[in-house]
Image (cartoon, rainbow, N blue to C red; front, side, top):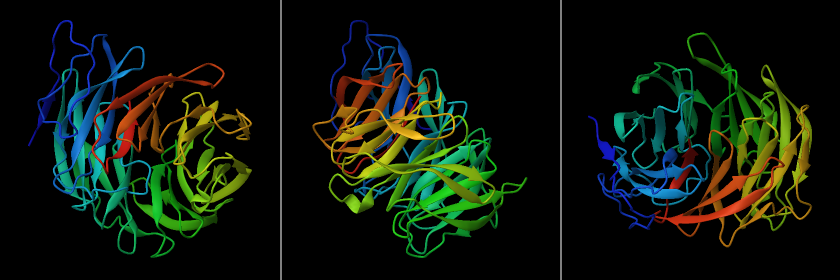
Length: 369
């Protein structure tokens, strides 16, 4: 069943806030041409919805309505990165329904977003999802924890029979699953065990593993990859004040080699990572209320951009992070129910573009196009 979200078009309309409970047909016209979108999840127990924001050419956002995700949320933080993601083409969105143990897919059209499919996640409490070349894997963080695979054809999801694999521990508190850039391996961060799991993928999309690698620092959480394939991983250090860090690794076949070990953010609870498409910069979102930028050298070494760790300050906590595909704009889900926005300069510095309201308490995930 397709559920459509259509943007209202009105000459002379201006950006404005909308209530947290947005209906499927509501929207606000953008005064400037729409250059892209930002997607989040409402994650409500009463029903999960994909929340859509229009992105203007200047990086500012306007609420554009929502689409029923076909399941329910948990109403609280998922402790993850990657609850909602885009495929390589930007034409399909994939998201978790953590409260009803399912995943959903959506098609992005020029004037609408429509839900395509909803299927069981193959486990309990899916919190992170990843897609590469028509193959989808989901991290089920509940129960004993697992990953499970699916194929995606024009947004239609089909479970990959027999693809469920365990994590390193039944008490992993896993945070994220993601394909490597080549798509031949999966990585999973485990907050509770201080482990990073690696799974090798065969030609049929089936995973072997996990091979378990130690994290350089405590509480590995979110991660991304530079354009050389290095993994850049945040380390929350259990939320200890001003103690979080970011590490980088070379990813081999079933192995990680540390490049930069626990480079301090000097900030609190670095949980989310966004890496520019050029691979030159990485940003850590700190739940304590700031963003720490790093220069990423060609060999994967990390160098903090600002000695005090505050490439961007925030008046409230950062609770997830995503870069637009052109890497010119950085977006954060904020703990006060807004979406924060920054422009990214050529030297990696950030300039604030304000914040846009419209998120209910317990919202989850963020992805940008």
